[in-house]
Length: 141
Image: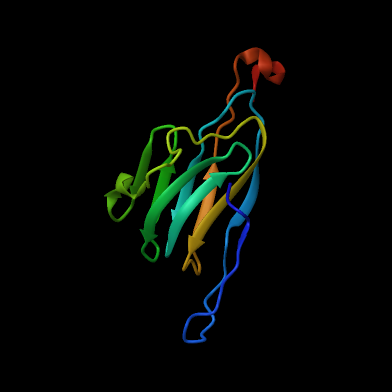
């Protein structure tokens, strides 16, 4: 898994390079089985990876977003769509867990590394799922 903090360094010309760190959030899946999350991103910025540090599934990306460009990642459908450029499936890097990126039941620690991201947005959505209606109180989620 990725570390939560990446330490910057000084360049050869003595200039300070920016420190990069991943944003961390916790998402609770109240379902009794895995759920496939959807992500909403708005640029500018470059997304390097999104990881579920709970189950060690990582989407490696080479995804540069333009200012105010909106991108929708749907792991259930296997799509990455931009409001500006259409399909961005080419941005998935080798070794990614794109089609197996899920939220496990309970707490999930989600990390995202996005650089050059002043005023950028990354949001995650999911619909809890259950093995059967018996797993819910009164048959409802």
